[in-house]
Image (cartoon, rainbow, N blue to C red):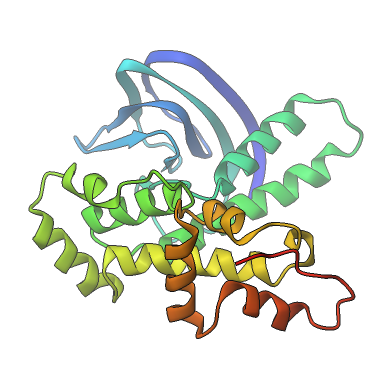
Length: 258
């Protein structure tokens, strides 16, 4: 189960003709975008970061007007609860990029006992897919906003409103839909991710030499004073006080200046 039988790679390609496999095929798009077509007339559009999963003996083709690149693997009897092709959209934390790249490397290598690593990577890839499917109960526009935020929340120049307005829906409708499905507004969702990252940095010894301004920038804030106000509202204390509290007894100074 979850055994990786083959790993290949497409350099820039425009068309893959109709074909089938005896095993499951997992395709990770490393660049560009395109669409899979299936014998029943259905299609699955994809773009960079998406994984398309095709069950055995399902006739399919893959095409792109501008070209795509991908890593594709064939897997024996993965524990997917589906008999149809499906897509796992987006890879904001790079988990699939890591497992597919590692699988490609070990499959093509002559490293002794490489099969042990490939077996572990097969289990890990299948597990990531099943976890992603179990947490994908959001509508497509809401999921697009979530992915955009997760891709860019650490970038101070990320314009959340602009990203939402790029979608083909009314801004207020998307904001209300996001809050209905996720429980918070898009801004609150992004702020939560930024505060979680700030909490991790300020409570870690490895980051003790960073200033508040540097921590703020790495968490997506260009204005350290605004970052401190948001942090204080979220945690009830300043970033410096938080760092001192969590590093007390660690034998190291914080190095943080408000």
